[in-house]
Amino acid sequence: MTNNLTPSGDKVLEQLGINPHNLRADFPNREQRLQYRAVVQWLTDYKSKPGASNLEKVKGYLEAFRHLCEVEDWERANQILFTSLKTPTNPTLHTQLGNWGYYLEQIEIYSRILHKLVSPIVNAGFLNSLANAYQALRNYEKAIEYHQQALIIAREIQDRCLEGRFLGNLGNTYLAQKKFAKTMNCYQESLAIARQIQDLRMEGSALINLGSFYQIQGNSTQAIQYLKQGLIIGQEIGDRQLEGAALGGLGVVYRRCKEYAKAMQYQQYSLNIMQEIQDTKGVEKSFMNVGAVYRHLKDYTHALECHEQHLLIAKEIQDPLGQRRALEDLGFIYYLQENYERAIEFYQQSLTIARQIKSDIEGEFLALFGLGTTYIGSKDYVKSIECYQQALPMVRQIGNQREKGEIGVLLGIAEAYKELKNYPKAIEYYQLILILLSEFNNNEAEILALVGVGGIYSNQKEYVKANHCYEQMLSVAQQTGDRDIETIALARLGSNHKKLQDKTKAIEFYQQALPLAKELGQREKQIAILINLVLMHGEQENYGQLWDALVKLIFTHWLVIPSIILLLIILMFWGAIYAVISIIIFIGIAIGVSIVFAMLLLSPFLLNKVVRYAIFQNKKLKFLNLKNKSG
Image (cartoon, helix red, strand yellow):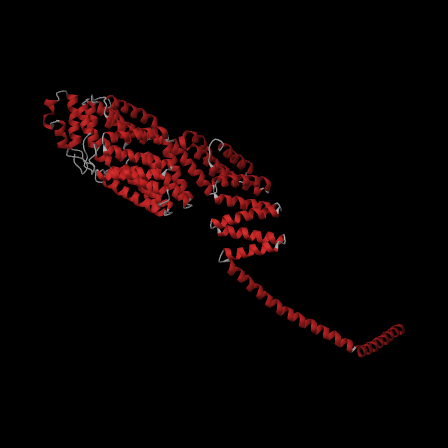
């Protein structure tokens, strides 16, 4: 068996001490001989197809291993696992399976050979690798069990190098479980051992682990310090895997710090290294992180490309967890693009995989939460509530994420009921959040709940109850120094007091909000506040304050001045029209008055004519009457 990844099968057979031409003599037992013949055939005759996956490329070796296990030839089986592959880092076969993400295959081979060899070092190594595979599959209980067994052996044989390495890996599992105190103990002990025995690779790994720990803790300064130390060691000893891991870690830290240019630079460097050393899991992780940076930059086209690459790799190495995560990320990008149909499609696929894995409670929760949020975006509030309700019982099983998870779900349900105008239900869930916050300290969630309840009361015109919420919101904002929320609370209190016809209080709150809005550069909010102040000062006939507010309004935004000038022009235009109409009316009145005056001057003559006309008509009537009588 030969390809660009594995050494010659003939050479491996030579190292194993198996002579293909002498099998009958060496293995007189027919059943044994059949197994060894299969070993020869798999190593020499098997050829992977062009474009085959990495697993297909090493299939001949794995099958040879299985046949050796059948005849309990554990030493030769072990040699197969420790065959060096032709990649830039020359890893052993069993190690590279993990780098590619073939954890199930790793578990199978370790389970077959574990404790079959007399060497405690080899058995400890297999236990450690078995633990790493279970950790990757998020079976943390199994991972800890095997890590601790490996650690016991390392301490029994007093192998400080193995002990330090195993402590670092055990710390990684504790970190995944958010058991931070245990994590720190393992990492610090690993670092101390590395420095004591002057093992630079272990020291670099321990420093990178500590950097990741501080990044999760939100201590960016410490995280960067440790990761850079780890990076320097990786570069000094030429360990590309350490270097790539450190660069990737720095990329994550800078992304969290919103320094996206730096984050992208480090993640691209990490991606290049992982591709160079053919670390498939590293490449997969790098694509995920680069995609996350693009997402924060709102470059959704490139973000989608990265997450699609992530999905492709996860499918290739049959990594269900990677597939679930990639599908979840794709769903989120489509949600942000308001392509809710596609978002739902990807979240549904992610949910299906999470349920197939069974142990991936966090994945199932995240998929249901994503579906709930997307259904709110598409205004399908009933389905949104269904998804959130399914997710709610899972929050207690997702460890350290419980607080954010439960609050997020409750907020989603409350928002959905609010949009359905089922205000009692919405208030019920907002109140549950406020009760929950007595257990967890989360100012952001408290503010969101108070805003929600206050908004509902305002919609129902229960302004006194709404104001009670906004006063609490104001108090939290002032305690935490959140100037933006403080401005919102003051503005809403001003608005509600205005609706309660308490203009004095309304003006007081608006005047407190105004300098904050100016400080934060919120011109639209300034303009809205000033317009309300102008109107209320006008209603109260406080002309001095009205003028002051009007002047501030004029100079708040450059559009205000041209707007007022335009208004004056319109008024002048209408004034000109009014003047023309006035002149016409004046002329009309003048003509009318002149006619009346002329009539008054000619009245004697007219009166004479009228009298004469009346006499004539009277005579005419008499004549007609007489004629009728005579007839």
